[in-house]
Image 1 (cartoon, chains in turn green, yellow):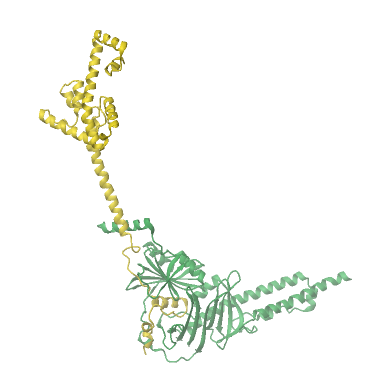
Image 2 (cartoon, rainbow over the protein chains, first blue to last red):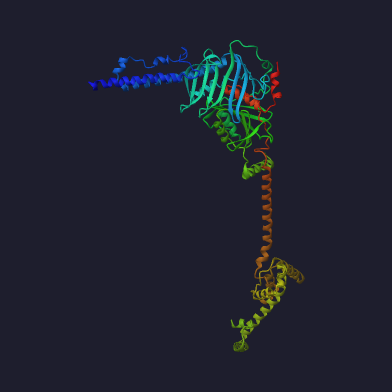
Length: 402
Length: 219
């Protein structure tokens, strides 16, 4: 008789352990600003809560422990898949909303750069489907009433808010796992919270998407050691009816407005340029593939823009033929892993092998260092290099056909 | 062997008597001994001006008494071709030969003393006296060629060094062609970065606030 009763006891014990475990996991999932899970009916898979094991006790008692475990695994996997799919879908909807929704507000951007933290306050005005005007202030240096820049990016507006663009969300899906976490709040508004995980499971970023409009309200980015390296958030936002359009847009906008010829196939552009003596990388360390390219002509010659991203980290590389001036006013010389570079706020520049490289990076410092190390260095060409260059110039000088 | 010892004055006593007695009877040996003595005299006659010239070139060599004697002995022991003459001596000899041949009207000797003497039908002794360096005619024939080679090598070296120095000088400064000085247009770059990254553009920190805020004053 005791032997007959033992399987029943085991099943009871398993249920006793499993049910609180699942409940505890759900409780852990809803921490910080995240409220208990309730899903918007239109966008999410059928209520995950409903998938929590709620089987009849008698059936459970009769079932073998192995079967219970298998069912739980299946349910957990299904829940995880649904949450992942929902996370990416929410980000995709958010990217579209960032373009389609009219809004105005104040953004606070705090990022950890090469020379320390950079904090900005930016007034943003965006009209549905088009114009975006931003007016940015560095609160550490200037009075907020005196903005340090005014940008009109008419017709080529940023295609999203806080890095949530259609292109970058597509890249996110290839490099990260986006998981819907539940409801939360940001800037006093209800929000959906989406976590972004790396392949190793570590948290890479967290997004708060406005529940009503799906426009991103906040984004936190973490490096691989779980340190917060970027915090972008609306501190004030208003959707729908906008105040009068800021004046500068009517005058044609930014003083540095520049016509860039965007390349439809970025890889093709750099292949062509590399064939004519440029040194442009097809990808950057840290798993950052090329996703955008453009070029333009300025008073200082041709400028090539290359954008590299995994969807979250974005590194923009600008390459020009020439060298840096002897004096770099406003730039601080910094030794970055043995490379002498010049840093100004968010930007890093150096000259190497006949070109000037400038990068602007929204990426962890470690990635930035890897990127700089992978590029042609600013080091002296050495005796042989100098002789070779001199002979080349000499030949060009005496070549009657040159 | 005996004859050379006799000529060198190395025999004495009974050996000397015996050798002399043999010479008195043997005409062949007498002729050979006479030839050897003549040769020795010629060499000695040559040795004095040679020594003077050499010591003048070596500078101070003549002032050393013991060395002088040794040098003389060495010169006296030299073979029929004489010691390897110095360049200066060769030039002098060459000049002497030429002036002599011009005086005699026998055409230019061109330093080929052996050929000239042979052409004149002189004996071997005459050859030795007039053209002591005839055993090394190549010395004279090769000198102008070597001189040309030196000139050629010097010219090539100069050209290589000159090109190298020019290349090193021109290879300095910036990379590539005479490189234009580029100041990154940060404001423009920042906008392009913002457009593609979906973020707000950062202001250009290298610009003075007054200049940067100019755009914001527009109505």
